[in-house]
Image (cartoon, rainbow, N blue to C red; front, side, top):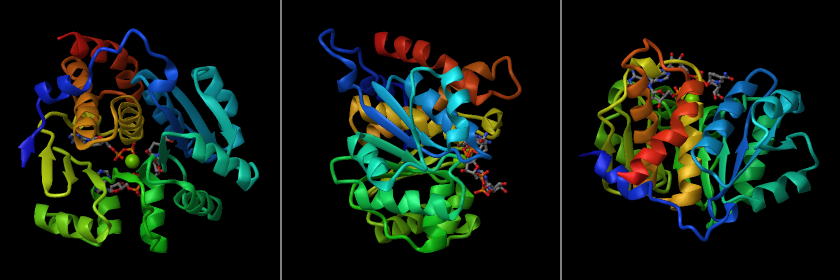
Length: 277
Ligand SMILES: NC(=O)C1=CN([C@@H]2O[C@H](COP(=O)(O)OP(=O)(O)OC[C@H]3O[C@@H](n4cnc5c(N)ncnc54)[C@H](O)[C@@H]3O)[C@@H](O)[C@H]2O)[C@@H](O)CC1
Ligand SMILES: Nc1ncnc2c1ncn2[C@@H]1O[C@H](COP(=O)(O)OP(=O)(O)O)[C@@H](O)[C@H]1O
Ligand SMILES: [Mg+2]
């Protein structure tokens, strides 16, 4: 198991080429946010925008439109009740898709997940989080052939792998991942572990100041934005996971809890500093 270091992250968060445009920094689609959990999709989207995604679209319940645009005019909106062919076209247009933050477990949520799995191709990156992971486990859905990243916390991983939390050892986790077709796994907890093929990385920063609703939703947006602009790889995912906790640690010097929205606000300055060092 290797520890993720600042030096590893500096290799990922590089200066942007002068001759570039938004089309090169990733078209990110966030699918989530039902009537109860709109904030989850909004935090994911705002994190993606602030972490540098070129274009961000949110496919969510219409009830979230006004608050989304009031808070984040940079984001585009698609009503997740739109006709299936429009939803599929939106999914096809994305480079990186996040599904799950605040999605919920209803029949409509399941339909959106199945449509995404059916539509996504091998050249796209798909990040499955939150409710979407619970739906995969509950309905035994086969995972699609794409660049796949799973971001469960320990309980979500338990549902998916059928490993009780106390049995989530490195070798047991690796065996479960082999059965799931070797996606990248971000197993979120105190000292999060990241798995890909035989490689295992550990985050040794981050504190319980992160133990507040929305911290994981925010992480999904950072990972998606990083994959969209720095290419999908284990190094890129590690850099995103590290950035999330490093910002929290900085804020936690003077704060008991670090709010997801505060981490989001600090992203552009943190990335500028790393890219210049
Ligand atoms: N503001 C919002 O709209 C929020 C929406 N959320 C959404 O709510 C949905 C359900 O997600 P939840 O995670 O709350 O619900 P889950 O019921 O899937 O899991 C949460 C429970 O798992 C247990 N658990 C064990 N180990 C854990 C670990 N290491 N980390 C976290 N929990 C652990 C805890 O008992 C915890 O109450 C998701 O779609 C999520 O995106 C949450 O993220 C909270 C904030
Ligand atoms: N005690 C802790 N130490 C370090 N990191 C933590 C701790 N508690 C939570 N976190 C981090 O906060 C995030 C929580 O994700 P998640 O449980 O999915 O939150 P939510 O779904 O509410 O957004 C993960 O990145 C996790 O590693
Ligand atoms: Mg979560």
